[in-house]
Length: 159
Figure 1 (cartoon, one colour):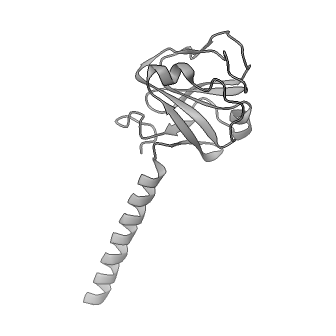
Figure 2 (cartoon, helix red, strand yellow; figure 1 turned 60 degrees about the horizontal axis):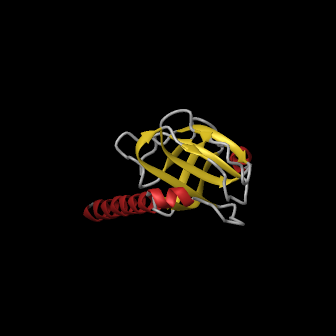
Figure 3 (cartoon, helix red, strand yellow; figure 1 turned 45 degrees about the vertical axis):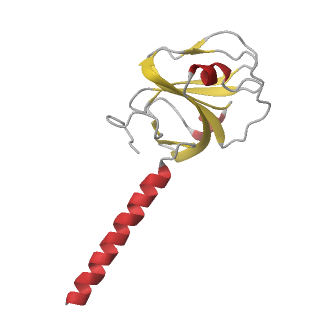
């Protein structure tokens, strides 16, 4: 009887360790995860979290793997605007609120276009991925996002 309890306890502890390890592995600074009706997907991201990195963004990038992107993170939620000056590839811009919920998707921003692309609402971050990919995957307003550098306190999908 004592041996069965010990085996169950060990199994329970291994399950907790496995679950914790998965949760920690799922939220890594170089990855962003999105979840919606399509299931879930992740991208390897470069994080732009200061004004110099945000100003440069993906300018002068000539090619980007389909599984890659750039995550722009702001210290506070606010309306933001982007342009495509010196950007060589079409991009989808995914505007994300402080809870990690997609508010707007701007598809296929045109390379070199200096027209402003607004979030229309306050956002905490913006994910840029290859143009057309958001529609292909099914990323739409309401899609949940998680990344360890986004606020966790009231997150729709916390790390």
